[in-house]
Image 1 (cartoon, rainbow, N blue to C red):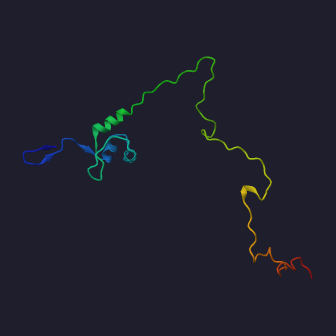
Image 2: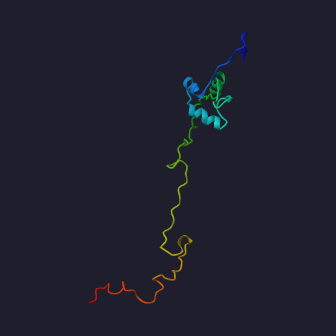
Image 3: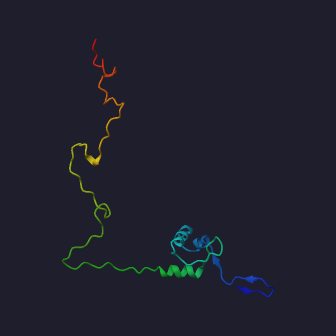
Length: 137
């Protein structure tokens, strides 16, 4: 900061909010916030609840992310070309089919519970609902 003769202060640098950075550069406010939460992205100051960026820091961060394209290497004569595409499921393993199993009580290790004391399975005498269902006259 520079002091004026009258005692007021003047900012020597201009700081940008995330919204202003998003308006000036090809990056969104959301992306800046997400990068900052991961400790990535351009350096920033946070004297209050807002992050403040210097334009030279944002530009240096963008310049540091340069990607130099490289030509793919041509396969040698007589060698098959390697495919970069994985088969079908993007590299995920396909589960092996299980052999057919007849329905058994031991499937998945489950056991049935014994019937409760009042269950119809434990009663020795037939119930009224069970008699006469055959249509006898």
